[in-house]
Length: 425
Image 1 (cartoon, helix red, strand yellow):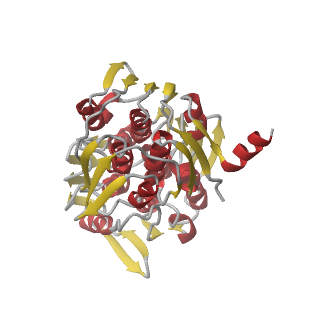
Image 2 (cartoon, rainbow, N blue to C red; image 1 turned 60 degrees about the vertical axis):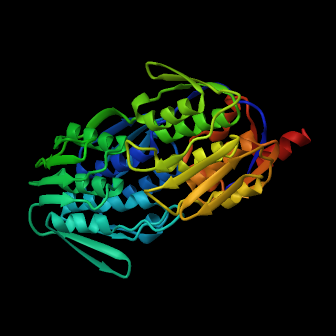
Image 3 (cartoon, one colour; image 1 turned 135 degrees about the vertical axis):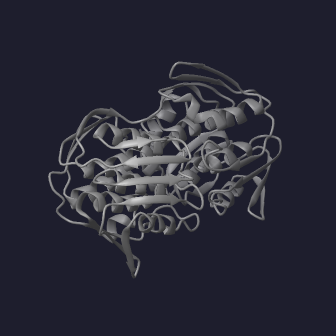
């Protein structure tokens, strides 16, 4: 069981922090390693719980893997099992995309309904509809989906709404074999484009990745890839920027893709904060009197849904009224009641969170999902006094070396038992 986090807040963050590789890019790329019997070598992979869960699943399917520092070696000479067991899939929604990889490599696959964060329904109907549209047979029995390739995958998938997982599912299913597929209304997120770039290096032909229309021509055999570097984590970068903004601090981020952060940076500039970019570095200096703003989370290149709870925590510290809504996951407000425990003044009405900024105070709160946890960390860093955050296993799924990085920025933070031991010493 994860140890609670203790944060003594009310102190501005100062210093430098290096952003880790993106978890949401690493997971589909790990799934893509199933598509070839040849070795894969990834450099700078985040050591997170979600990554470990995906590796457990790949090992069950037949993958051999080994860490060497932060590099990860993977090889899947053969697929030993074509089923993804419930006890692994239930831990993380992203694991559902191995269905497409199994379908491509072996012609069949069986995956249970995925689990993960609990902030509202996230159905897989778009995944199933897409696979059927390009010729796969997909049946469901008591929450388990079984797919079979009865002919080469061909056709045109038109998503009702852009879906990251659905787009990745089709990319994985179509990259290997005699497939010719077009995706219309594809997700444009950088993590999707990173997967497409990786599949292209393996030998697939993919055009239009990162746009709304993607064309895929599968390769008869996909090759291994060496020394592939995963893109930086834009959500982690955004979390540290919002933490610095909430504490009125001054920080420098290293290893960032600036254009991946456009929507957030625009809002921070609107608030009056100072930003300067140089190469893969970003300098941020908070204004002492930020202005409130409104946010609607939406598909990329809009404001990221994964930063919606976290920007809400920041806005809770900004005098004035801000409105926050989420077009991607309209029910994603599990953090609101916990922020209220810290003195935040907010009202949720008709799927819009009205936030009236004020001074926050330390409290005992609980994270119910990864980004709600990020929101509580940001609020606790800004709040006066001590906060105790339960549910930190969610944070371990999405933030690498969180305590160490925050301490490097001058935050007083630690795990509950360690804090007690240090106090005793």
